[in-house]
Length: 136
Length: 252
Image: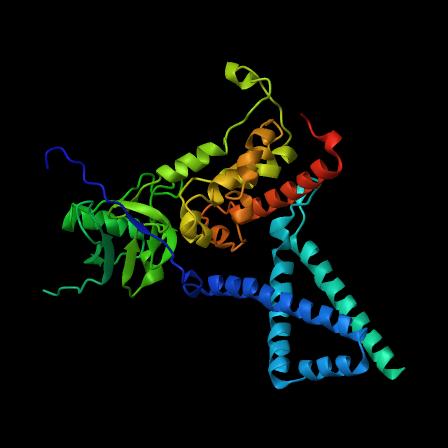
């Protein structure tokens, strides 16, 4: 060996398929992927608002585009992703904010529950508004 | 004369020596004992079957943090992984991922030590008064409770092995070091927030974390490094806007 030090360390990583290796990783991967669908949804709504100010034929053509089978499937997948994203992020809040009262950290439920409550109220208001507009 | 048939469990242990081209897995049959942990099995192998097997361990009670390994693909302290949880086997033991392997189950932690040192995980006083070892800084139980969870880290590095970001970025400071930075930033005796600021807030600091959260799931001391990092993000964001909107409140 002539005094030569043999050190050839091997590096082992989780690799690029890390998200397939555990259910918890897969859930995070889906949560992050959901952002793409939500971003596309936002763009579609912005275009819808723009089209609302255009001639009626343009607006109707865009509505027809949104109702084609491919777009309907996209919207169904998007709503599933939006629900997953919202549910998972709401549940992560207690880790993000440490509020201490009388020296004790408040239970996570007190941070999570108001979010779901507010979500339910806002959803109810939107449904009521859509129903009211539709009925009117 | 009757002979009881001894129950055994099969081990597949990662083997690598610096002068080998490739790592390999070696199979061992280990007697099953209900009260044995994976570390006991490794000690059995080393003592009675193959003395060349190399691994780290010390306290055998989940305090020293030196016996971490991948057990069936999950980062675990081998002193806390009971064989009964893995029956009937086999049990595959590998070195922690996301680190260079020096030999068998021994990884190199030099990179981690540099990252740890970069966040200055000790109490810093602006007046340097801790140097005289005589100063006393009182702290209430509530003030202590604010950072106590993050101070439980034993540097076992399981969190790094669970972190996909660490897997793809050598520069990411990582869960344990960032949790310890947050631990000292929350300590009322410490005045080193500004000194740690650049390291924590740089791209390879807290902002590289994508909140996978697995670091907290595997932590044997319930430190919750993911929580520490997110709380540091919150503080960092507030600090950014304070500097932007109220620069006169920032100490020069």
